[in-house]
Length: 185
Image (cartoon, rainbow, N blue to C red):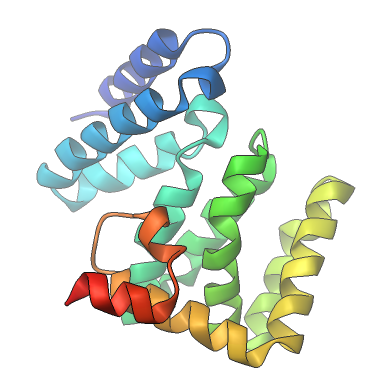
């Protein structure tokens, strides 16, 4: 599959969503999920092309899902951080909807808690530092949380590790660890 074909499929999803994709959020996310599964089945190269194009589709609505998938890879290979930087950059350039910020929060906490301080500083300087002040403030709150709440941050890490091999499920990620372990058993 080519980039042009992937763009055509993403454009079709955007057109079905109408003028405000947020109004049809559940359907748009389901369509993006089905497209992701199709692209993933076609191989790693096709998935990468899809990921790069989907970052900017539908106002960036799929960014939290892509960040989850890429964060899982980062946990296996920390050299994967450049892709995370790219996803965070797309998030900073997205519509920055409340729902997307809520979904990204536990993932960003997990990432920042697991990343080298130097790399976090680099990201904040090179990517977030160039973003809108509201976005900078959002990231500042997250980094402050990570630095001041080690126990809660550890909980986010534990929950993500339990779920990281699955397709993103933010409802499960929101459960307390004990309930999550019970559901996973």
